Structures are given as structure tokens and as C-alpha cells.
Image (cartoon, rainbow, N blue to C red; front, side, top):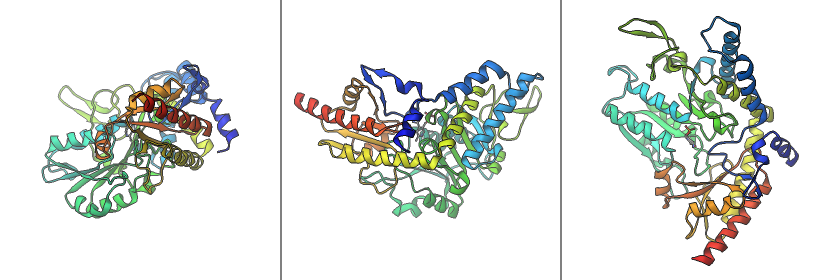
Length: 417
Ligand code: PMP
């Protein structure tokens, strides 16, 4: 992306034009949540002003229009990730999607081919966000299955040398992040899928940090499930996506039950609609889904490969620039994995929260803490880090301001400790 293009995108994002603490905002926290362009805000507002109605029910014109827009949004998401329309399930976020899969698989009657039980194993990795770890811990606890994990090395790279002894005939499911939200590194998914297929295990992909930043094709990756959150890719909060292979979704029982997901209900029992409606109990986040479709239009108009390239450049600049500052350690800096525009780092002797405060005073927004990845931080010998993350609207100038401020922080805290 050229500087002029990025400057033009920035004009679409009202939040980026603000000043914070007397400085122009440098928003380097898009991995937590992205800012939103007017095109997305307008799409949601237009819907709420003109078509707003209950989908899949009312006999009236607005209800029909709302239903059409809502289902069009589903197709738009499906096309974006290479799925079929009815393989896209709306959820409230990625966390809800992972829980949906974990609870649904856990609710299968014993003896069903997909059911989990003692002797079965679930494999995750040591770099997972808690959202792609705890639901599987809980599934294991409920069903008697065992949770195993693929360890990482000092660079945060997955240690695949023992893959064949960790993923075995007992493995029923492998759950893995496509991109780590702390390391920014792209995970070698093909290797895991290949091994998963060999042993007949399902593969669930946490695409939270990839869907917004890289081209994502669930069929090319050959995963069984994938999930992500709209709010990290220009859309509002409250909307997430679960992709599931159609045959799997059809075989899975509902997680939440209630209205909008049934065919026939008696006082004793209920029969359920096919997927995806079977998994969409209750009133859905319609305006948010429509806004997500508008966000995807925005991303596709630029082109995901071009966005990925822009962010790879910024990511490399982050690692190099931060790494050159004395006292800074970038987590996973020496990893050879391709990365997105994200770097988490520590500054010797300075707590991440103090550094975050120092940066905020200069209008620079970063995230501090464990970023919902405590095991990863523990493995890398720290409890907290400071994370800078980019998006299509991030400029080189913002990154340079970060370097300058971090250098200032090193000097300031160094002088005071
Ligand atoms: N997985 C990863 C890798 C993430 O970065 C996040 C968001 N921080 C999640 C899962 C969970 O997303 P959400 O909180 O939107 O459900």
C-alpha cells in the first residue's frame, strides 16, 4: 500500500483523527480490536434506520428486506473464506464459536462416532489464546478425554519434531491458532492438518488474528472448523463467525436452544432446523452481521494480499526497530515464521503497565498484560508484555513515534530505577 492510499483509508476512520492526551492518536492496538470505517458505520446505521425488523419471521416488507440483507451477509462471509453459505454460523464472537463447538461435541451421546470419551485426546498448542484453550480443557474435563499440547521453543515456534507422538490415533481434535496474538507468527497449519488427516482427527482453526490480516481460505487449508470475531476486522462488536464443514455441522447437536432454531415443538420435546439455523437460537446480531459484510467489502476492495503485504512490512519494521532499543526484548523476534504486523515486547526493569501508561501519555495506544495467553508468557519467562499491532491504516510514522517513545521510556525509567 502506498502512503497516499493509507492516508486515504485513514480519512474513512473517524476514530483515527482524534487527539489523545494532546497528541495525535497513534492507534497500535488493532489486534485487540480494530477501528471502524464510515462505510461500516453507515451500513449498520442505514439498516437500523430503514430495514430494521425481525429476520426469518414477519410477513411484512421490512422483515423480508432484513432477512435478505442478513442472509446476503452470510453469503458474503462465506465467499470471503471460501465456504458454502450454510457452513457459516453467526456467533457473538470467536470465544462463543469455540465454546459452541466444544459444548456441541461434548453433548453428543456416547457411542456416536464424533463423541469424546476417556482414552480420547484433544491437542492444542502452548501458544494459544485462552479462548482456544479453556473451552477444550473444559470439554476434556466433561468427557474424560485428555488434553495434550504441542510445546513451543524459546522463539515461540511450535516444536513439531515430536508431532507424531503428540498427535496419535487417540487424537480426536487439534485446536490451533492460525496466527498467535502475542508472537504475530503464522502457524504451520498445513503440517498439523496433514498429521490430523493421517490419524483421523478434526482440526479447529482460531482465525481471530488471521482473518483480518491475511487471505483465509478454509477449504484450501482443509480445516474442519474455523472461527473469528468481526470486531477485529473493521466490524462492530457482537458478531463472530464459526465455519464448520457441512457434514460435521449436520451431525452436531445444538448448543443453545430456544426460538428460531426449531421445526416442531411439543410440551415434551423439540426438533431442530438444519445447520446453520440449528446453532442460531434467539434473536441474532442482524445489524452487526450486515456491518461485517460491509467490512468485508471494504477489505476486499483493497485486497487481502495487499493488506497482508503492508502489515508484513510494518511487522518487520516493528521487530527490527524495537529490537534495536537497548533493554527491549521482542517475544519471538528470531523466529523464522512469516509474521503479521504485531510485536509484543518487554523492557528490562519496567513493568508493561508503566510502559503502556507512558506511551498513552504520548497518544500511543498499545495493549499491555498477558494478552489472554498466560501459558505462552510463562513459557517465554515473563508474565506480561507490551504489544503494538497494526492494520491497513497504520503508518510508518506511527511506528517511528512508538520507537521514539519507547526509547524515551527506557531512558526515563532507567534514570529513575
Ligand atoms: N483468539 C485469538 C488469537 C485472539 O487474539 C482473540 C482476541 N484477543 C480471541 C481468540 C478471542 O476473540 P474474542 O474476544 O473476540 O472472542
